Length: 355
Ligand code: SF4
Image (cartoon, rainbow, N blue to C red):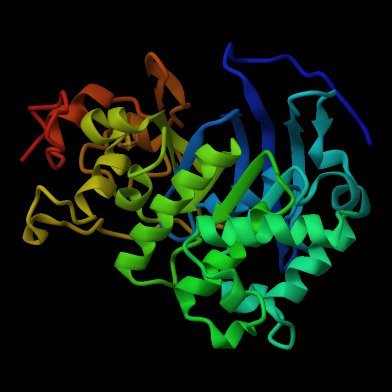
């Protein structure tokens, strides 16, 4: 396994450090970037919500963190993983077999959107758990005891779930069984890609709440990728908003909800229902996310931005700090706050923006 010690850019306890990370696909001879030179730190023990519309690059970021981008996608740049008790590891330098042997599941788990496709329909849930345990040299008895405890943590009856085939479980039960599989080898980090997208609203809320409990109990770092800003706001410490294959705003959750500085983040806040604002006040975001082969010049959001100016069509704003722990890629964050209202969250500091 290769190790490296790149310069640290934060005084926080960093668990993942992504530097100049891109993901490209060769499309008919043209290179299409679906993640564009991203620099990002994930902090140990946090719940990070990675938010954006479909096609924004958020799933590619999740896959790149774990060096799990599927061919023919090509990852460039470095992702460094900092284990708590040993040397750092450059994840992007590991081969597939090194990843499987050393890191995947044992230290980093990936929970995907569709439990239906993640499980083999011809195997029981118990057989899936045993297969994972044995592949990583964990004793069957000890591992299954942990699986039973995880099932109980997730309000599943292990006596019912373990002998069942996937099709015998409801969607919510399958997704919880998949979460248990993700945590069965006691990883440090769990990356979840839209883990509740196929479920109804109540089950989504229930699973997110259980996830927060599991995170505390097993001392996990969570990276939760979703289009649902409201849902992830329930449990995230920090939100990172993606647009056109890069991060455009990053801040603690409360700050995003009360004082988002990027017009796109404010548009996202207006596009989702809240408890305090009636559904009639929701407004969709006009236009659509850019195609990777046709990203607008200057600020990539400029064709959709209600406060865009000439400068925005020429220069590309960088993700710069605008406040402690709050960065945004916009030339006019103050104007965004004063011109684009957002729903009041009750207890926020953005009275101006509230409705
Ligand atoms: S830089 Fe300009 S176009 Fe981009 S979000 Fe800010 S105001 Fe809008």
